[in-house]
Length: 115
Image (cartoon, rainbow, N blue to C red; front, top):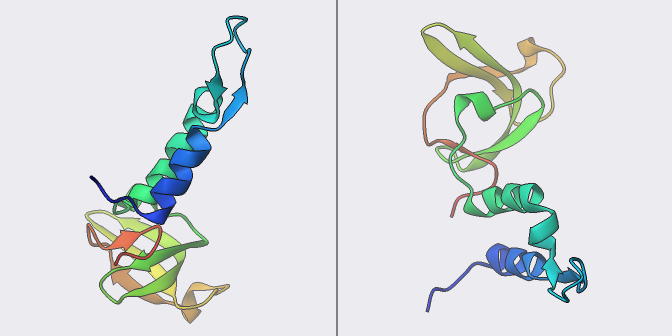
């Protein structure tokens, strides 16, 4: 038996919730997943928590930095060919002089904490 985390259990419950028992006239139940497949996919991505690609990083985003084991605020992703970097801080900042710079590293940044 595969043990699921609490987020996966919650998503599975939402996906399987019947919202329209007579949707097609044949009394075949329709679930949240049938109607909201795209949204359910987004929720699944949060549960799976894959590492973020550079293209996923956006201004004003909070991300988990697995190297420092803390959340950081992305002030601005910087694409300076050939290097890619991030202007960031440990709190919300309003100009780049208040923040720090680091090179982007693969498999370092996540949407939520990695345990």
